[in-house]
Length: 587
Image 1: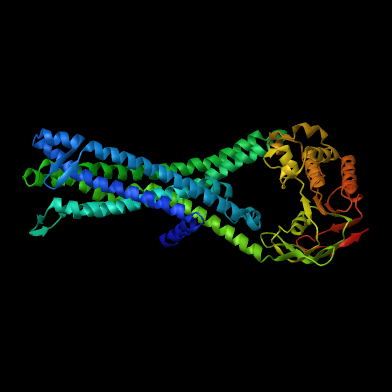
Image 2: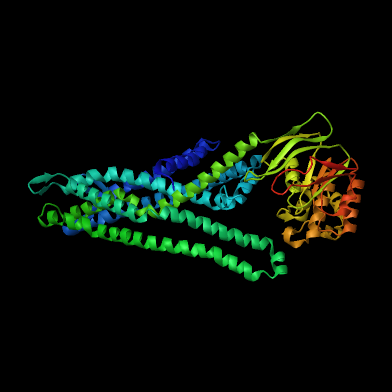
């Protein structure tokens, strides 16, 4: 964990944009209203302190009228009119309720804004993809979903509760320190007169408690940081299992999966036990500290009461004021566990936001320059592709793809076919060279297509708005793709990535291409789950329905190779990271 200064700067950088955003006036109004209500509650605590003294004095003096008035309506005292407890309590309840209500309103508005901001920045410039590559390489922040879904919620809630708690305690301290000073009087100790001695006692008591709490609870911040990571890793493993249930079932991999779950959950248990042990020590200190604080001010003030210098009401006021001063000075003690959790959350969000900014900055100045060109052909010039760890995968790639032709790229596993596919798509950030794109929309179909959550209609039209296409058009492309049996399920919502077979998923992606009609179509083994006859049928359908499209395929099957006009075969020297030859073109 980093030092306090950088941590507070990160917390400020995360918090301030919302209050300077387009919602700044409503956000500030809500915040100032909450602050005002919290300060009003502090002021009412001061009134209750004076009421407390008058009420207990009425008990000691057996003054029924004063007792009744202080309990229900009001009572005139030497210092003015004191409202009754019912009035004070009624107002206090209303203020407390609306303080919580407005706090929750601000929380959800702030969280919504931060969620939209983080999602927007994470998705912009394909930062999410670059971050996923660095995570796979052993770098970068883990579990972005957990940071957006959970950490933002914790950050907003803790920032408000801790910030308002600190403000209320500071105001309460300044409000009650004068009361305690006047009530405690002087103390003669070894011939030295100490004025307002109970203020100094409260200060010493709070300093000791704060120092001891920090000493005992300091490891909690790092333990909470690790706990959030282990929880997210375990949840991700469960979600991954859910997405791959068929593969696990076919391999009969239940025992291995259970062992993996048990292993990941073991980290949760181990770290949780460390949190338990540290929290146990902290609770011994905090609870003991709080319990002693209940009787400590009465014991310290008792000599003045028994000497007759103050009445029972003065004793209770002194104890109450001491509790307020000591509690305000000891705010750090009670809030330590929340502060530790908040710090872990800030660290995670700051590192995630930093990774997003770094990914977007790198996207602005990519090593591989891709952009529109003047001609009609796709050109790759002096392209060098690298892996995330810096290892060179291939060099000297010069390739021209003319419009309306078909090209197939083959090669052994590890020769860089899929990496070249990603580079042509403009999403591979590691390497140098230039890719010049002609006019016209391109579509890239990976081996495992992405099927979004929602209806089948949405899955076919992705990423376009499904309402742009009528039922007849979508039914026609499903029929051409060999999925006519799915037409009655167009408006059905399902987890299509798990409902459909691998071949059906690939056919659905081809239906998507037929629906959106790109001028350039790239397929990375996008028919690998189909039999050779079906592959040939799919390519004939693509050529018939998209006659003006340029088709570039990556494949292993000789049958697919025979369906294309041109053939580029990639090969790589072992450990050299180069193509055997720049490019071998076979007509």
